[in-house]
Image 1: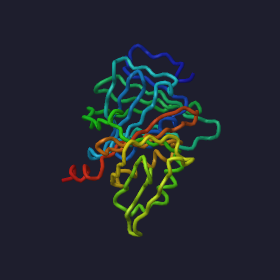
Image 2 (image 1 turned 30 degrees about the horizontal axis):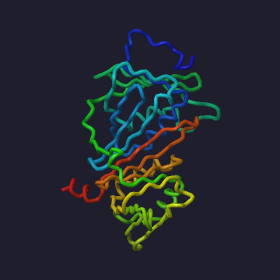
Image 3 (image 1 turned 45 degrees about the horizontal axis):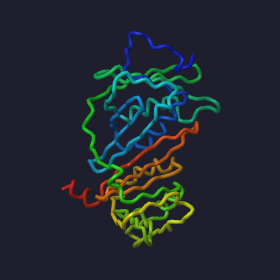
Image 4 (image 1 turned 135 degrees about the horizontal axis):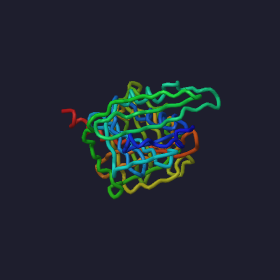
Amino acid sequence: MPFSTQPETGKEQNVLVATLDNVRNLSNILKAIHFKDHATCFATSNGLKVTVENAKSLQANAFIQAGIFQEFVVREESVMFRINLSVLLDCLTIFGTNSLPGTQTALRMCYQGYGYPLTLYLEEGGVVTACKINTQEPEEILDFDFCSTNVVNKIILQSEGLREAFSELDMTSEVLQITMSPDKPYFRLSTFGNAGSTHLDYPKDSDLIEAFHCNETQTNRYKISLLKPSIKALALSCKVSIRTDNRGFLSLQYMIRNEDGEICFVEYYCCPDEDVAEAEL
């Protein structure tokens, strides 16, 4: 009997229940933000958000809408807990990452509330495995305060364009410089590595650019070491939205289409280089 059709027993009183017919739709998204061991999970009736942070300078969020799940029940206004993301991914891929053709791993995820473990039931080919992962008190999450009213420049482009850029730029550089402007060079990526300076320019009418909304010229530098984790999401995505606000903070939002053709989003927030330097003092 599929997990989505199994009745919940009265004893469980779970505050969160989620089922998926194909667990890879969840594991692939979580791998895209897996650059630290621990993550904070936040569930509402709208879906599940999983957040990973690094040194208060980088934040990644995976958004999995409720409609992606075959069943998604949240019995409180919101449910929040911290979990070891490495362990969670190990459990989600317990049957391996490459199933036989036509075979999928189904998931039922249950959480009874504060102090209880997150329980996973995974089924493939009639074999069911249960995993219990200890949860922790959620830590305060950094609020980047990246609201739309403060956004100065925004560009949406096909991910293949950014993938090609990252393959051509000199990653021995400590920083990636991003210029966004209503005038030439419009959109420029620059590195300053061992081989010298490298610049890649995109005209605003490029076939790769789907939307171009730049109000003023901004040039900001970001530590490449902070941006590298986002390449995992870039590799999975079909489109990327690049935004900067009036403080120079950067948002990279990746649109990812899962194996069933449904859309999920992964977003990275990054401080400009000068803010990172101050945080490290």
